[in-house]
Image 1 (cartoon, rainbow, N blue to C red):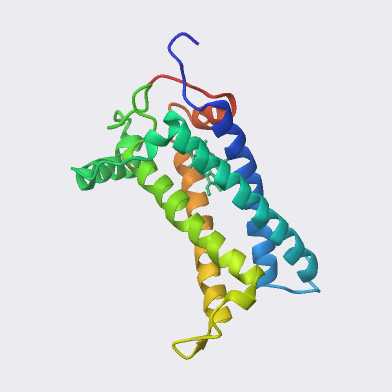
Image 2 (image 1 turned 90 degrees about the vertical axis):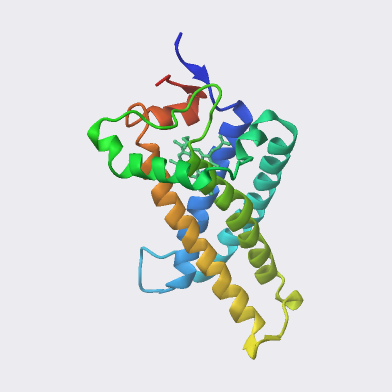
Length: 206
Ligand code: HEM
């Protein structure tokens, strides 16, 4: 363990585990509501899907609030502060590495270390999902739980319909993020090293 460094504090690992489990439940029940079919055994029954989805949504909002406080009051929040200077070039370099360099055995352009937790693409995608997509999902999700607060009509269309459509699109974005997140997480020092690291907290040096 001598060259390894402590990368994920306990609270981040606990939050991430709870967050991942809740998101998986939300995705399964969300799809079940969208493609509701009492004849299909793979789909959770509509009423049960709604109940589980609501409970998990409330729990996810609570765990997200704890994540926000953690990032506000511990050094972990610094990893989410991005410098816009040269960002395009950094993203391009990292994107090139993921698409080509990694398969040619090239060195990572922004290796993680005790001084850098995320590469530029991780940083942008984590900021996007945690500070843009999830908050909008919560707002639209809570609004759908209390539809009396939603505008009756907006641009001639039902407010509930529009909120629901927006909520579904944001949910799809989380699904897309999750696929890319898990795939890219396999491109660490070894295929499993990032997964080991988010469980144990220790990251292998590059
Ligand atoms: C089965 C589901 C999931 C798996 C296997 C997984 C895997 C991982 C792994 C291996 C890492 C560490 C490597 C890295 O930093 O890139 C990580 C970190 C992270 N994941 Fe996930 N993840 C999952 C679900 C999610 C979901 C649903 C979200 C958000 C909606 C998420 C957001 C994050 C964030 C923000 C970090 C960085 C945390 C920090 O250090 O501040 N993950 N995940």
